[in-house]
Image (cartoon, rainbow, N blue to C red):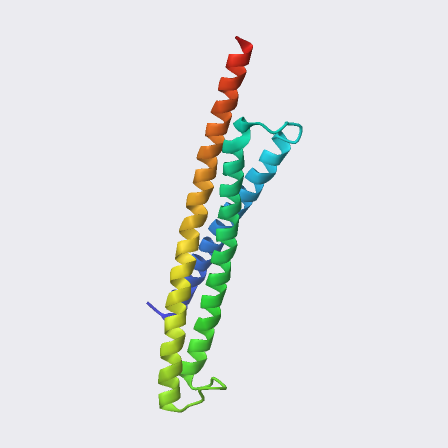
Length: 152
């Protein structure tokens, strides 16, 4: 596989991952907005607790998605710096072999750490989004049950 083919696949993967992250961010923001909209005339009651927890969960999902993007961007920046170091053109490491080695190792450690954090935030983004959905359904069932009791 040529370098150009590898670069193309990497670009397509990065684009797909970004779209997925932004899609989940949009769902979380929409779910929060919808919850606010449907309860704007409601008085506070204990039956709203599951909905409040859902909104907190969606807020956590949104936060995790934003943090994931930050860590991905940091990893991409570190990767660019790593390539400069390895090419011997980084302004601080220059072309000195021991500086290149030390900088390369430090940058690789940072990239691994950032990548691990980005993955963890990505997983949290999805899980919190789903948890919010489950809590929303629980809230809806509680509201239905309350209407059934009042209706009888």
